[in-house]
Length: 174
Image (cartoon, rainbow, N blue to C red; front, side, top):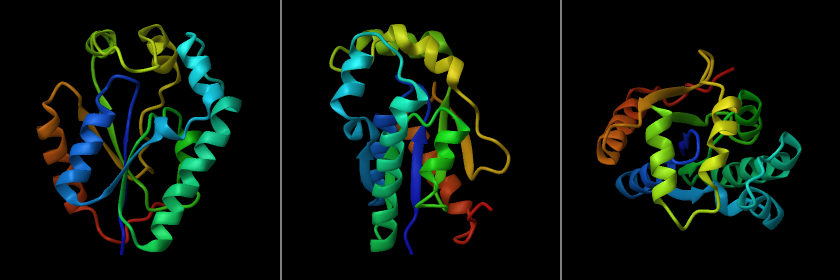
């Protein structure tokens, strides 16, 4: 049986760092959702324009299909993906209804400073406000936990692993 975990949150919250570490420590196959964006989405964000729901739909479906393919093959995964809205997470669960989510949440000022200090990413700090506006926290019926992004990445991974270990193998949300 495979497990599927998504590290979610706004840009700059540490999804990639935590996701990669979680994959390394647990043996889960890691994927970065940003790598699934079509070039037009990347160009739009790079120019300082926020993506619309319409822009995101093909990307979200592609991510859901990727996770579903891995699930059918029995391969466990960890995906770093913003998944800001409930409707986005619902799409991601279409092919992997057992997707478990770890939401990295914390102070906007810290996230902004992290975004400003990284030069290699296409997402400008100017788009953080739009992400914060779009963010819908995990709901009670979603299989997830929220962790404080001010913790060290190794602590976040440790807490993620502890949370995952407490989840029943058949805890697929209805």
